[in-house]
Every structure is written in structure tokens, then in C-alpha cells.
Picture 1 (cartoon, rainbow, N blue to C red):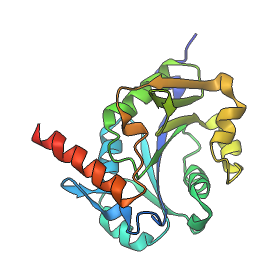
Picture 2: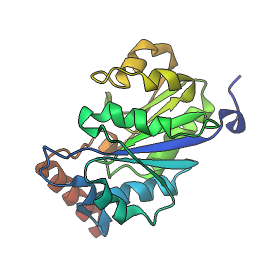
Picture 3: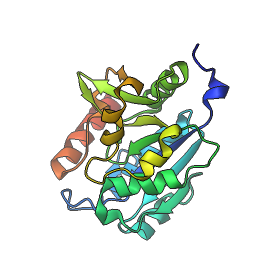
Picture 4: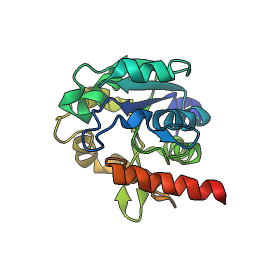
Length: 209
């Protein structure tokens, strides 16, 4: 019998925003995106969703980014080892999650098209299922954000830097719920200047509609 919402406990969001944006050549977190910056857009979506807690992991030029988001009701943690890759930021963020939390929603800053509706759909799927890992899928491709039950906390804290959370997903296929979504926002990464320009065109078009 599926667990009810209370038994499923609180969900802490971890927004990964520590990277150097090497391929972009600019600090992607602070690039304009509509009326706000990329990171502010991501935070607005998380704050409008049903997550219970938000942790932002910063690293490269963290003081500059922090000054732009310190008015948000979120917790900011610093990953001093950000140059070691995304896995180091996942570990830093999960370490900061309260012991009372039951699950982590791992989001990435280079997906500013992800909305609160998408996040809430994943939360609903997690709460209504007994699965421990929830992954959004668009046309067969898995993306972010993902939800992972914190019964895996110790495994997350010791993940292989090269394999990341895939290590846990592939090791526990019986615990994975894949949720089909109608938007490619969950797979649209913003790694290059061309990626950024493409996403800007999309929001510009949507604002004109």
C-alpha cells in the first residue's frame, strides 16, 4: 500500500550552481534570462513548487553570485571542491540536507526552462509511489531534476565522481520510476553560448504569445 504524503516526509531541493561555465565562457548563473538572471529564474521555480527546503550549492565566484541571491529564502552552501565536478556539489548539497528530510530533489542551474509544474509533477509521482528514485523523461531521454530518497544518503555521499548519481540509478533499477513529461525543458542544458541563445529565443517567443 503506497505511503501517504506525511509518511513520505519533507523534500529538500538542492540546486547545483557551483560550476565554472568553461564551455560557456561566461558566468552562466548571472546571465540575463527574461526579466531576471538564470539562477533567479531557477530559484523562482523551486520557490513556487512544493519542495519544503532549498539549498543552493555555489563554488566558482561564489561571492559574486551570492550577492545576487541573498534575498531569497534559501540556504547557500559553498563547495570548495567545485573543480572536481558536479558530483562534489551533489555531495556538498546532500550533506546540508536536514536529517528529517526524506528525499532530495537535485536540480541544475543550466535548466532555467524547468517550471514549478514540472517539479510538482515529480513530487506527486514520488509521494504516490513506493519508488525511491524519480526521473523525468522526454521522448526516452532522462533528465533533471531528479528525486532520490534519502535512504540512499550514505551512497550519495560516497558516489564515484565519474559516474555520479547514475551509479545509484543503475545499481537499483527496481527503485526507479521514470515519469514521461511533455516538455524538453528537462533535457535542455545550457552549456554553450549557442545553447543560451537558443533558450533565450524560446522564452522570447513564449512571452510574445
